[in-house]
Length: 481
Image (tube, rainbow, N blue to C red; front, top):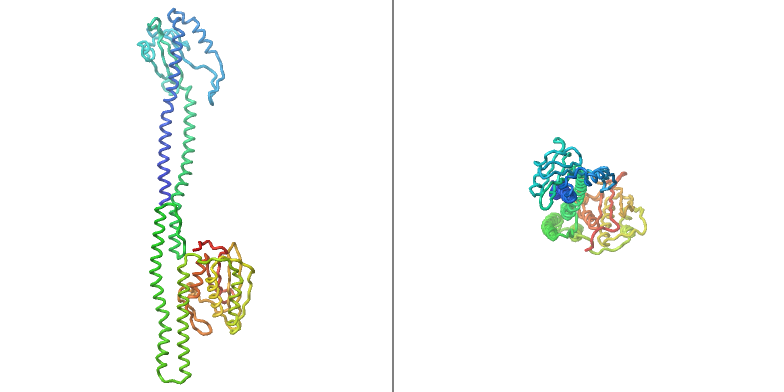
């Protein structure tokens, strides 16, 4: 499980538990809270009625007095009250009144008159002068049949002469409880979904820098020249800097070791030839032989000079992390100039150029590096072109990328060499002389392409010969340094 998923799951589980706990606590307090609100209203109602019926209880006129008439009118009343989403039309108060002995004198439902309610908690406690209340189910098997009763004492001259009890079916608050519970669940689901979205954004934000740092490390592993990512987190920025410093140090050590090894290897053969020729020159020989050995020394010395020069150029471009002197240049015109500068060499072998180049193609790059790279490609094509052959030079533009293809009519590239042509010091013998080059030209082209954010490909043409294709973005996505 990767870090992003772990952070996301940890955040979601923590926040999800918090939401669940809050919802559960709120739901658990919902019903008691509504019952308490209902009880508070019933307390006021019972005490108000106790004051209203005091005289009728004292005189024994409760059954046929004004209170009984008012209650019959109240029971017959129909009204249209809109309480949020609920429409209330009928009264549902339950009222009964007992005497000082707990015997029911009046019952709004007319079914308990004469019964002894002195043992019911509401009547018993009220007759003692205490707060009396109870909740009783009308049907023991139906939890929604419960009725909440609240009583108040009826007093006359400081003496308790009866009890008024007001009841309210609990089912009347059930729609509000269900609606509130439903709203809590809906809001909870929305909160969880919102938490998921926020968690995803937080996870993405927290791991974005890590992903950038990982991409940088992978690019270094793949041999690219990435810039150190600019990270906002101080710790990760320090880690990126340390990684880059370590990369530079390791590359520097490997670079020196590899170059010393390769340079030593490449210089052995020319130095041996020069040493052998010099030793032979100490002996007496005819002028023609002497001239041949001197020419051999000059040739091998020139070869050493080329290797050193190319190594220096290659060392410079391999250490570049970006463009040192970027400028806009006409890349098509530069290609024509390079080919024309080598026209004399082409004429010596009867080789001709065929151009299919677009005009005025502007490209941001380093002129010196591109001139050297393009010159190496043209020289390579001349080396492998047969006498009387044609070198076709054409370019194309696609999605902001300029591609140049140089096609010769030589023997092509053997299959075993296709994957090695860009290695340092790897070279194939020229068809005409069987002489190998330094093997640094194509390596230099590869490095120049990398610096410019492009690529170089070498393949065999469909009709024979080799095809070198250099692709460069018109505006490289690299920071000039």
